[in-house]
Image (tube, rainbow, N blue to C red; front, side, top):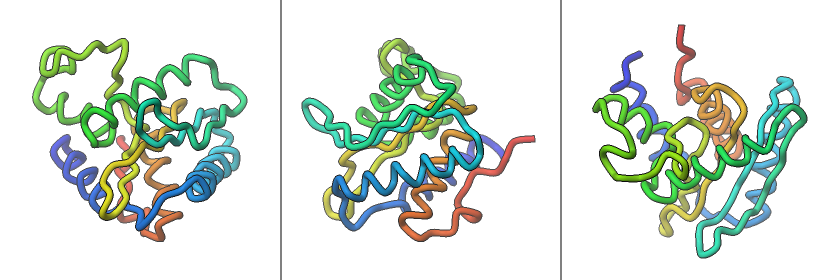
Length: 169
């Protein structure tokens, strides 16, 4: 699969994976879904779900065994990308890679504060727009992205097999 194919598929994911409403109870269910998937697969990840605002409101956070404080820092940097661009962190990273550019070159943004690696996905509410982000950190970036998409598919009852990014060979 090419970069362009991945970018197109992620745009489709972002278009489809939208909530009719979103509240702390839904955030909790989404967070627990991610946690259960990771535990069943023996994955060490940090899970973060937050609503944007000043300051951001953290609705769910869990650091599974094997993670480090560095994972929390990665979460913050990925969330900053979603908050700034209203796109998944992986979509922004693939777009920049496809255009042989970087955040610093194209947008004058410091990489110390922004990470265009997979794992942060916008929480889009119908008739409200992007209100927050769901983020994981700890796996290779494509797997971080796919894990979030899988949990969103479970919560929103979409077929993950048709939406997920294929595994790279």
